[in-house]
Image (tube, rainbow, N blue to C red; front, side, top):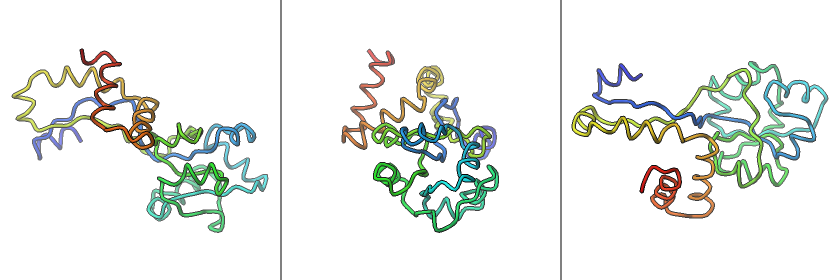
Length: 193
């Protein structure tokens, strides 16, 4: 992608961060503890016990060829359509907290993970693609500002899932301004004086 984007579009990609904002399945932590569940590969055994589990998914993920049905096949479990509730990702945390679903589709850096005390089930067989953020800019900007690579090389390694969950929480739940959240984080991280 880096090579093609540079050649065809004049776009320079810098190193990606360790964060992964991919699709994920989450549960309330206390329920995950009750079922001794930490990873997706443990779901089939639990579902085979005929546990009454409801799942949430958004329409897009459910209907994608690489979505919910492919996930079930990959991990070897089957959830009947009657046990799937279609909820936007933004509502998954609430649905989990209210007990409307026990396993919910969420993104890996969603603020609701912190707010609703969720446990993201480990994708221990690597079904989901990695969606790591990476800074990009035009080639002429990199040529003009030669220090950009050094600046970004200090920032991106610090952007881990826990950090982004916390920052997203401050913006989405606490309603803090994005600029203020970013500046405060960079100051605390020692990136700004």
